[in-house]
Image 1: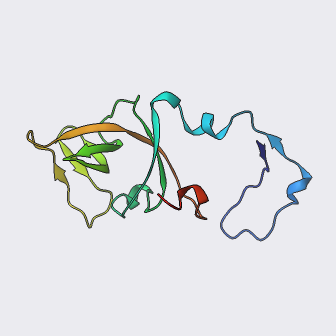
Image 2 (image 1 turned 90 degrees about the vertical axis):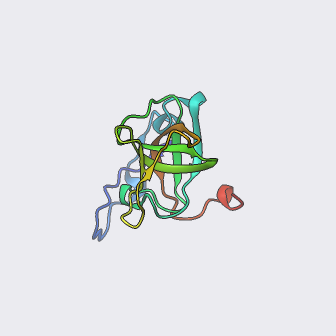
Image 3 (image 1 turned 180 degrees about the vertical axis):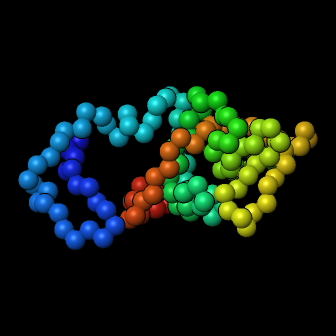
Length: 135
């Protein structure tokens, strides 16, 4: 992959020609974003409950099943038959949203609950990918 070294800042007024110089990146995007390929899946975020941690509706999330969820991690879980993306509070057994409009959810002993993986990355598509149109 060829990388054009442009440091883009807010208020950019111009930059050198991209053809002036480029660097060769030795990693693929898979290597850069996915640490455990055989234990990783990709999902699409829905809703606005995680916006304060930077995960917005339509974002791509990379979920690693190999990672052990720690207190405060963003996770994907199966909660009573529904997949949810939340912050796990292991000490108080809570699922937390990252938006003040949503209340914490208590994980009771009678709830069906399993952590499917830890969200390790999120990607925002500024133009809709044709691969994601029908999902």
